[in-house]
Every structure is written in C-alpha cells, then in structure tokens.
Length: 365
Ligand SMILES: NC(=O)C1=CN([C@@H]2O[C@H](COP(=O)(O)OP(=O)(O)OC[C@H]3O[C@@H](n4cnc5c(N)ncnc54)[C@H](O)[C@@H]3O)[C@@H](O)[C@H]2O)C=CC1
Ligand SMILES: O=C(O)C(=O)Cc1ccc(O)cc1
Image 1: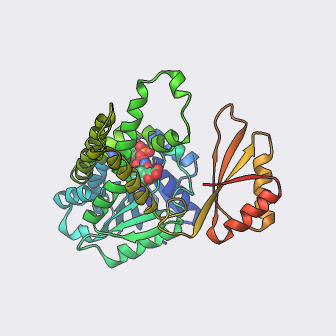
Image 2: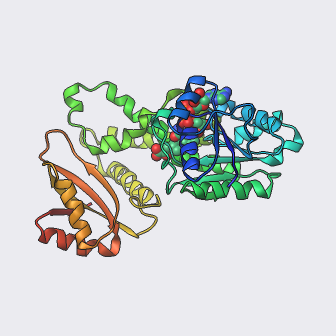
Image 3: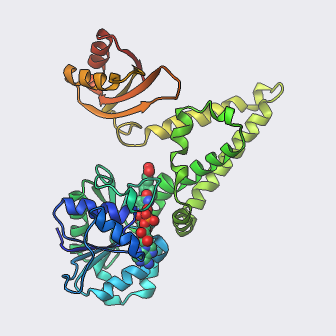
C-alpha cells in the first residue's frame, strides 16, 4: 500500500477513505478548503494535518465535489511530481476532459479515476465511516496513458478497504452510473416531491414501500446538481425513455376511467409495466434483488417486546444458519415488526421449519 496518502476534501467520502486506510495501517494526511472540516476530520480519526516537515504523499486522493475535481487533481500532479493522483468523483468523463485542458501532458499518466460505489444520503465528515466501502464495487477508471502501476495501486487500495475493484473506461462508467445511481436519484426525488401535497393524516399511512423508494431523496442538493449536470447526456437519455413510459401509463389510466373497451389494451399496458419491473429488479445483483439465486429472504414476525429480536437472532444461530443480511420493518403502533432475514437459499426450508417449530410465525418474502 502507498503511504503517506494525502486526502484532499475530507467530507463523507474522503473522511471514510481516511478512516478505512488508517485502519489498514496507512499514514493519512488530510486537507480541506475548510480548516474547520480538516480539524474535525483529525478529531474523528481520519488522519493527521500535514506540517512543513511531513513526507510527500505517494498517493493523493481528491474527494472534493465534481466541479473542482479536475483543478485539484491538476494542482496535486504539479505539487507532487512523483505521486499518483486519483479522484473519486461520481462522474468520470467531465473530470478527465477538464484535466486534459488543464494538466501538462507529461503529468497525465500519473492520474487515474476512481469511484467507490458507496455513499449515504447524508454528507460531511461527521457521517464518515471506516466500513462504508465494505463489499461495494469500486470503479477504477484508467485513461489511454494511465501508468499500469496506477491501476495496480488503486485496485490494491480498493481491495484493502474491503471493496471490489472493477475496471471501466470513463464513458462506460458514466453510462452505467446514469442507470444505477443518477436516474434513481432523480426518480426518488421526483417521487418525494409528490409528498408535499397530502395531509399529515394521509402520510401517516405510509409503509415500507414509500420509505424504500424515497430513502435517497434526502441527498445533498448542491452535490447532486454537480453530479447530474456533469452526466447530463447519459441521464437525459434514460429519462427520455422513462418519460415515454410514464406517458403510456398515464394514458392507460385515463382510458381506464369510466367503462373502457378491453380492446384498448390499457390493462395490458399496466400489467406489462409491473411485469417488466419485476424482470428489472431481479437483474440487480446481490443479496436481495437477484442476479444470483444464492440467497433467500424469509420474513419473521417479531413481537414488539424488548429482547425479541435478539432472541430470534440467537435461535437462528442455534439452528446453525448463517445470517447474510437483516432488515427490520417496524411501524409505530404496530404490535409486531417484520424481520427480513436473508440466508443461503439452500437453508431456507430448514430455517422455516425450525423457527416455526419454535413458535415463530414465518412468511416468505
Ligand atoms: N456522497 C456520496 O454518496 C458519494 C460521493 N462521491 C463523490 O465524492 C466526492 C465527495 O463527495 P462527499 O464526500 O459526499 O461530499 P462532502 O460534501 O461530504 O465532502 C466534500 C468535501 O470537499 C471539501 N472541498 C470542497 N471544495 C474543496 C476544495 N477546493 N479543496 C479542498 N476541499 C474542498 C468540502 O469542504 C467537503 O469537506 C464528490 O466528488 C462525489 O461526487 C463518490 C461516491 C459516493
Ligand atoms: O445509497 C446508495 O445506494 C448509493 O448508491 C449512494 C451513492 C451515491 C453517489 C455515488 O456516486 C455513489 C453511490
């Protein structure tokens, strides 16, 4: 691992990177445009403030907003002529294009793009966590002249902080994140804007579905203006298709009012939407969505009494089944919570049988 690593921009991502690297034994130096933020980062264990006597960094990580990333990378390349320099901005083409305008030709091979696909809807160093990148993809984005050593170093860093390195070029990265991150942000925000209208009583009926689909609507507007603006073409293309689909749904619903002629196919249009959505969600890799059949989720009803969830987890352990993931759904005033328990698919029947025998109520997710 390179050491020292200089982190420029110690907010949520820079702070989390520093904490994770320090845990891996790396000497981390912190720098931020806000001295207060840098001082707080030191107090939170992100790294140390560099002094005049500090060693030059072997690697610089720029974790500032996307609009300043290219100029900070260029400055770092000039300040430390022997260091590798990476940025972690959520968009990669605009940073690379900006850098091509600013940087000296001979400095460019020491630059490599990066993007940890992990975040939180809260920003700032106060929300930083050493385990933020655990199990998450980390996109490594070399350009034509990137040094092979830079690719090796960034992939090694990604692995060291617990994430999974994936190499892509900037264009493929930006198209991919338009689909999996940027359009979801727009649609989640759009959905949340519809909640400004209903009464409080109406909102009191909200369940987990609304919470799931609006979680990221709480994101930072300043950051997202930069991200969406910098990936406007790719995001716009997906949204054009979404808008056409939305119009079809709206038309089908208009036709369905009154006494629709089955010949119009309106019910079919709605059924197609939901069914295609089913197919889409199953393509999300990982524990919940599919892409792999390795995990199953069972839902266990947990009485709203102290210690019940702990008892459930203990008994799952006693049955000898490894818990892969756990989500608790609990609405105020409800007498039971729903524990969504993700486990190895081959253990589902055993666990369902054993928990039922022990008096738990189990439903399939
Ligand atoms: N928030 C997220 O979920 C993710 C964000 N990213 C990317 O990481 C980068 C940082 O995002 P966050 O940590 O969420 O933002 P943040 O707002 O928590 O932190 C940004 C930090 O950069 C500092 N900063 C701003 N201008 C600077 C400058 N000129 N020089 C030095 N420091 C400067 C700010 O003072 C702040 O401490 C962005 O490029 C973002 O696109 C990447 C993955 C996930
Ligand atoms: O919360 C989530 O699910 C995210 O995926 C967060 C996220 C936000 C911005 C990024 O550039 C990368 C990841």
